[in-house]
Length: 292
Image (cartoon, rainbow, N blue to C red; front, side, top):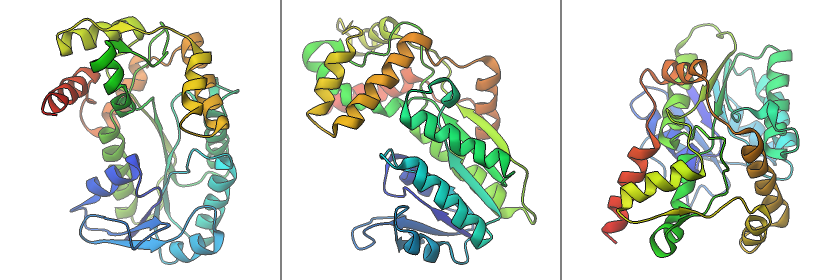
């Protein structure tokens, strides 16, 4: 039983590794810098990168189940497609692919439409894969700390239609459960797709009201200014990524990303329980911030 986890040092990959503990499988973690990586006990750091096919081919040798998380990079689609091709070449019997919620509805957002293209390949090739489709990560809002505490505003321009944000811990747990389920099966299992969503669809106004209640102070919604968002993000990262975020938020404002009862049921099915709520996250974050 050998699993390979890509994206192992990131937010989701680290959660996957944590939830694989005690599962009885040999776990390898792909990383560009094995000497710097700090993984849970029993995890073997393997040097490699999805953009380096020779290193990925070597990392896949002897692997039976793969967790594929392609980075939000300009060549994300190419990396994901080639990784799947090498996995098939290596004889991997199970794959868990991290896609995105409602990827088919946001054709102008590169990160979304690229992941949906990978889903199409998985379907057309009938690969033995679980496709996980997480909504916007709840923990992204840890970046709102200064805006909330210093300025009393919720600054992410998510609009009025609502997003069923998901906790990253639930994503990691769902991925680990699926990896182990596929790894423990004698034969490859059929394809399955699960939405990963939170129990509540929150928008700018309900989010500001929630934070007002949690923090015990007035918090207002900063509004839907996408130009300001792009300019702010360009100060911290590449222009293409800032534009990408602008397009994603425009999609949220125009269409929303609220989960249906059926999609919430999928999340409950893959987790074996109800997903964590945004309020629970906000209360825990506020308590931690209060400690300094």
